[in-house]
Length: 421
Image 1 (cartoon, rainbow, N blue to C red):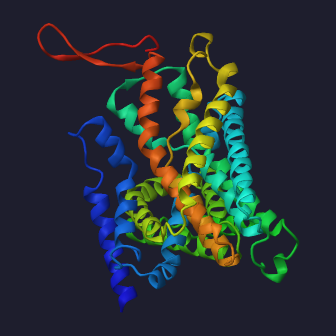
Image 2 (cartoon, rainbow, N blue to C red; image 1 turned 90 degrees about the vertical axis):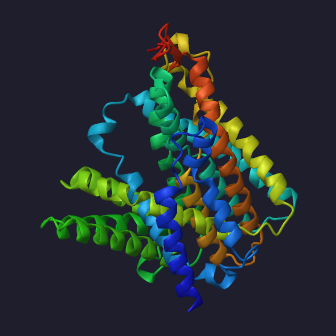
Image 3 (tube, helix red, strand yellow; image 1 turned 180 degrees about the vertical axis):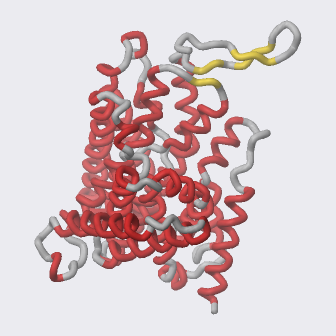
């Protein structure tokens, strides 16, 4: 009964939060940036969790795996739909290389730094080291949410803003792929005997699942079901796909992302799928954030230095990786630190962190650092969710790509055009 009441309460919070929790049009830009990130829902989840109010007990949080699976599947599908080849062809090879390069630079610095810290503190077990590499996978991802809020608050245009929009929309693929690689190398759990082909099973299993579920979607959606049935079909697809992946100890995000790519490039209903997933994106996102907050524990003081390390290493990695943008930017824009436009984080990063906690926490129960790293990563993500868009706006303003509003002689507000238009 307690589990049922908790589930109903979470559903109610997610629906109300999606309806009212992101309204801030009349507020200041700083408050809008905070509200748009959804960080307050993580705080709500922590306050409702077992370590504060206790309305969501620790035993109940372990029973919320289906909701986590639904969130992972939903986020992965929605993210994969952005990889439509007709859209990706509009960008140059150098720009796609930047998407991959800056994310790999950030992952390398983060993984190396966090692993070094764990080794110095005596956490040299496989589970802890795998959690550090999974944290780096979450850290190498940028978020388009902060970019969208900044772009919506003023007229923005120019090569840096265009490139930042591309990178923040696509570099989540690197983090998702690196998480799948971490699972493959760490060997968490034992897959089904038919897939027992060594480390590659954690790469092949989600890939085969993506092909299977993508084919099922194409087959079952030929009759174009009504809107209500279509949403239920997508809910079932996300839940079963992610749940199957988790049962095989493989990456649910990876399989859902590949399925989204499959649908985006082969299904005639891809626009309808994207529309349906977008409509329910906020309730699923709120539910995901509340559950993430309930899973926080802060049982170890080591969270504090790990948060500092995560923030510093990730910021340095993005700034260093941003230097790869110099060849694809006009010469007059190369004096602006492009990496500063990539600091925002969001849902994909939280999804990677939660996936790692769910899989590595269950497969390596003796690795106490897994929970600590999860706590540190979530706190780091919140810091970047709030600070990233502010830094982005200042960087674009420095580059002259933001048109600031000003008053004309009659008192009306008009737009001043920046130098990049």
